[in-house]
Length: 215
Image 1 (tube, helix red, strand yellow):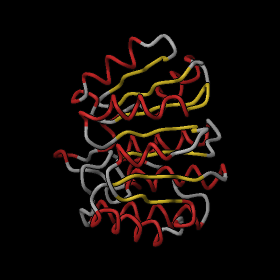
Image 2 (cartoon, rainbow, N blue to C red; image 1 turned 135 degrees about the horizontal axis):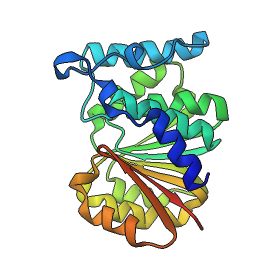
Image 3 (cartoon, helix red, strand yellow; image 1 turned 180 degrees about the vertical axis):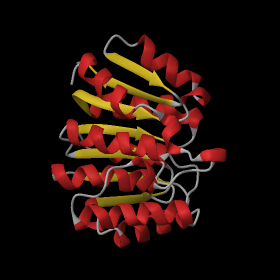
Image 4 (spheres, rainbow, N blue to C red; image 1 turned 180 degrees about the horizontal axis):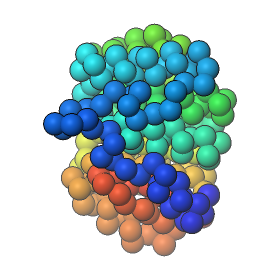
């Protein structure tokens, strides 16, 4: 995926405002995503909608960025996605919508056992539990055990640790692979790293960043 292709995709999905209804309330998935094409897809979207309605979220990406993650997974034909910061599984479910098409898997890291268990339940309820490995504990240590190649990374955990996660995972990301990060305004060291490394090309929009590893 080159910069022009990446930019074109972001023009399609890079509208964070659509993830919120009037009054600043988070919108349901069905307000921002197309009608499900298959029963299996509908099952995942129903769980996502219920998580929003019942506020089963904890510092999760919004629906627009979740939808974008799904498209990135599919357009890169990702087989191995690594997520740092599972929370209750909202972004992971969006990722799994894409992985259902690519035949890939998600490895996701969460420090809080309670949130990790809720995420596992959400994955099982959505019918994608077999696509996901949830690793509980200190991600800074656990990501050192990840094996490449990695097609796509999502960083959504401790913001001060983004640069460290990048340093550990970048060598495992394949050429043309992507590193995405949420809430990048809170991670200035990470922003500096992805904008000064000649191997990387980064696009920012809203609170999100997408970085392509060129080589």
